[in-house]
Length: 228
Ligand code: IYR
Image (cartoon, rainbow, N blue to C red; front, side):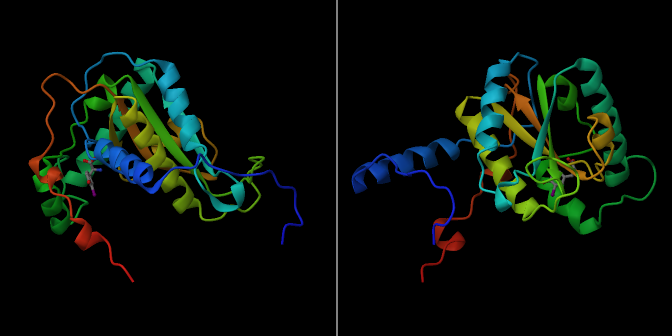
């Protein structure tokens, strides 16, 4: 039933062969993406960040309320403040503050192959931190009242599109999730109905960048898909 305003919709027609070739090209490009923890301080054009956020802002979402906000942190002082607060949380998480770790032994074990610890220099080195917020309320007007729907799903998809766009633009990213991360709301001047979801660190890999070999082990199609 189309008892609402509509506009026509169509896509460029492709042959099956073209469609397969395009899907594989995108797959092969995205397969080269890695979560990078070693960044150089080389600059990145603001226009790339703007375009990537615009791409993320087209994500499918609940009732088209677009329940996200992207706080772009570029200033050295703000990055330093975020690094200090994040590292303080991470020291508690890893038990590097002298107390028992907040993370379970199982969780710490799962992270061992990634080699992570409380030291997060990339939060200062990389040119941009995009702090992603989920708007629990607000609607399209961002009034802080209207109920939003499928907020986590919507923001998750938007983050995926943001990361894919930045990768296609030749940039490295890192999804960083200090826990807890409530401090980011104040650091970025966001309202109480917004929940910080992640810091996306964006920049160029340092010359000596590496990734954990563990990260290259991807489940095969036969394991991640079933055909019914
Ligand atoms: N937030 C911590 C811990 C961490 C947790 C997971 I799950 C990771 O995949 C990676 C790290 C940190 O950033 O070190």
